Image (cartoon, rainbow, N blue to C red; front, side, top):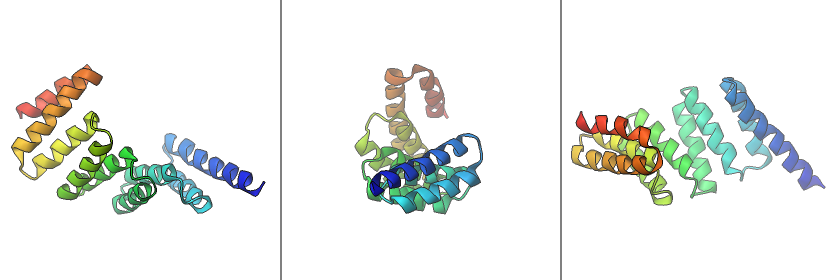
Length: 159
């Protein structure tokens, strides 16, 4: 009986965090996502969503810590690896970002956004050939998944 109550309370807090975040009240969402892991710290989605919300608030180091916790609980959470990579890239920590994108791509090799973002991080480091290869992979995947994205990525290749 107690475990059902704990799960119910967790879901209320988790869903509250999700709802609040979707209404652009990130500070409230962070508070709700802070409470959810206290009830069950093994729910990686709460840590992942907390990381996304912290990113939106510009609290990048805290976001990275939340993404780290998410992948510690579930190393196969490719979204947490991807968002960690984006946050690291935003901070100019490009080599770490590339490592995070590589982890995301190990899990989901057809993730067009991860290939594109990896290309950006490589370009920031001046690795033009490797960046071009990552962008080409993203173009290939965009043709299969979402053709409207391929023109945008092609423009990136031309610059």
